[in-house]
Length: 176
Image 1: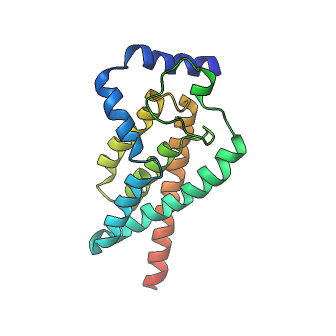
Image 2 (image 1 turned 180 degrees about the vertical axis):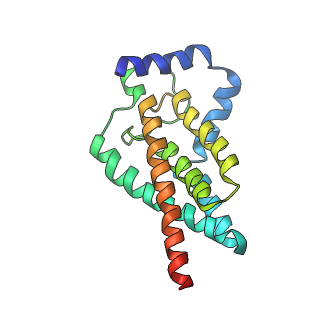
């Protein structure tokens, strides 16, 4: 499986690498190094009275993501990153020091998308566009295996849905 995943990453490097993406995708990736993009979105939504429920859903999803991805799964799997296997690749960013599986950038991004979608916010559509670009950036930058990105998207979907359901449960209990 590792050979097939390296082939995908190498294909991206060979056929899609260009000056424009070399400049843009590291910047895109940096917006979520610690979940900053999605934390700011949650904070802005929490400050807006009519959007507060969506901010709560995203916040819950991000906390679930932090615990499940960074505190449980990454240490449990301890997967080596692809740039450590193929050392000939020129990295465009500082090499991440944590484990590779699952992709935390992708998980946080899809957690926000699915929290917004499940909670009923129309913001899920632009968030999905941003999440897809974020996920692709991790492959383009050669810092994650394709299965890391897929695992991050699936984890994000699950915790995003759960975050919205937690928000709905709290709302329901407050209403009684």
